[in-house]
Amino acid sequence: MRVGVNYAWHNYGWDFGLPPRRDSGKDWGPRAAFATHLQEELRELRRLGLFAVRWFLLGDGTSYGTDAERPHLDARDNGQWRFDVCPPLTAEFLADFELLLGACAAADLQLLPSLIDFHFCFPGLPVPGSSGIVKCGRSDVIVDPGKRRDFFARVLGPLLEVAASYRDTLYAFELINEPEWCTREPGFNLDPLDAKKTVPREAMREFIRDGTALINAAGFRSTVGFAAYPTLARWDSVDLGLSLHQFHYYGEPAAIPRQSFDPQWPLIVGEFATAAHRPWPELGPSQDVLSRLRLLSAKDFPVAFLWSRNRAEEAASEPAVDWSERTRDLVAEFTRG
Amino acid sequence: MGYDERMGETPQRLRPGRAPRRLAGLLAAVAGGVILLWTLSSYVRLTISARPPGATAGGAATAVERCSRSMPADLAQACLAELERKETAARRRLWAGATVGGVLLGLALWADRSARRQATRRRDA
Image (cartoon, rainbow over the protein chains, first blue to last red):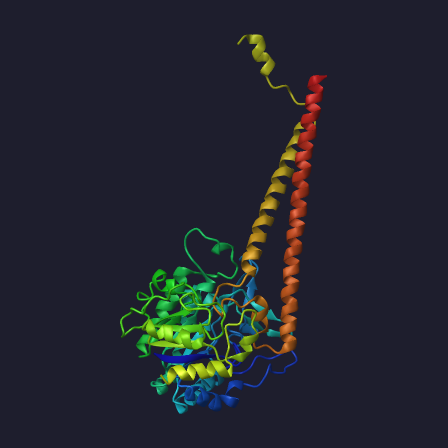
């Protein structure tokens, strides 16, 4: 089994392109700050025996659609957030993406970019002190067919064009991370009461199907980082046209099903915790990242991505990240066989 | 049943002023009930919307973590303060709704009960 790692960002939502700006005119920080130590970091990951990094591109959309183009509240529509125009990606964004691809190629690592995160569709979150910036609030991109087309033409298309020069470096292209968290399931449930569930399932499936077709047509593997294993069947991931199926595992279901997808279009684990986090029921009390990797390998998964090397996430309320030296040693022990 | 007995069941005409008072009581009860139901559904909506979406690393991120992720410290603090302000305002609206709805419903019930008591007293007298 090959092992990759979720980078997953240096600056969530503004790793690429011009940085967000304060009302004072000062930038939040330097542009593409990840680039400063990227070469050493990628070399270190390669040294551990990892083959790829997964990286969030737009995240919650912080830097995509700012100032006059930022999402706004629609008072007429029960407080829904509107994203009127899907702007094209800037030249700076595309250049930074190419910089990342180039660095991965130089380090002999592959890249799994994740285009948007589920937060992209959550209700908007204005940033006081940066009135041109609204985090989240962009569900129109998924729900409105016209905006969806614009988004694919102005965002996904140019990224795929850049990636075409790095065909061997791009492991696969992920359309969205964990779409379940912003999607309203049909039927009788509490989803209509949840303000975070802004996208009906059918609209999300159409977004995935349309985006997947473009990725496949560009000659890349297409994937979606489903949050849960049962979604693969419930949303019919095969019918969506995905060529690389993916789910995230954080202890549920109790027994990890064996990988049984066609080897040509396999199922991979896109995230699992490097910290103790929630114990895996199939493993004993003294489980660690090594025993987890061994279990996934025994279940025939061809690829698994660790969550994550971003040590800032170790301070989360329920940390899933442990990128300590010990974890890195255990990862290296596994990859060395 | 004889003719005289049926006459005894015929509703008596209400005294002038009593019908509008009853209607007002009924309207207050309906308004109070509707406000309480709205408050309850808003409470459920607020509670459901405030919890982290799911059990993955990303899904378990709280609103506070979402606000502060990769943001300059002062902006993150301002964002958190804004979130808190919005939540406080929403909770205040809930309290106001519960109070107004409760008072209206309570008054309507009290008025209805006292009207019945008066009617019973009059009948007994």
